[in-house]
Length: 166
Image (cartoon, rainbow, N blue to C red; front, side, top):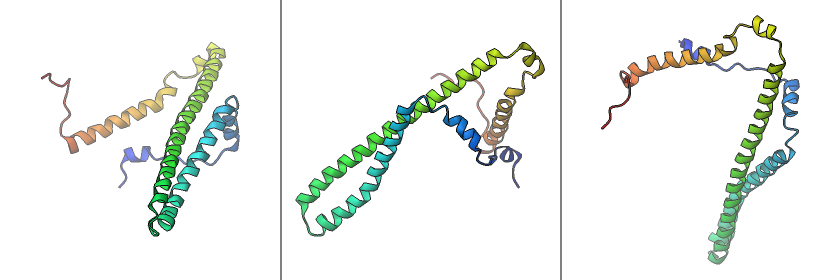
């Protein structure tokens, strides 16, 4: 039997909306450098990731089986460089993608704020005040119910108040 809390948390699958994707893509337009840098680092990191198994095969076939340890040392140095490229590409991609996302969110929030500022007061008279926060309230209620179930069943009674000083 599915718990009511589990039913509320199931993801709602929505079909792909090309119009919405196009609207979101317009927010990326002011940041072509970040987008290109992110794409280049993805390709660089993926290339390095794919090169590693090939280099391992090369190491075994050309250097380990024929016992050519001088060539193996050189391949280990090259593999270390490939690992370093992969690491820095991954770090750069993470940083650039985060920066791009933050810039897009800043633009979205700024546009939303300016839109709300343009609305007439009559709009706010028609819309009930608590409706936008209803989903947050439901999430808090779900967490409260889950913790009330979890604490006694698994962890025992929750402590009230601050921890004692020692």
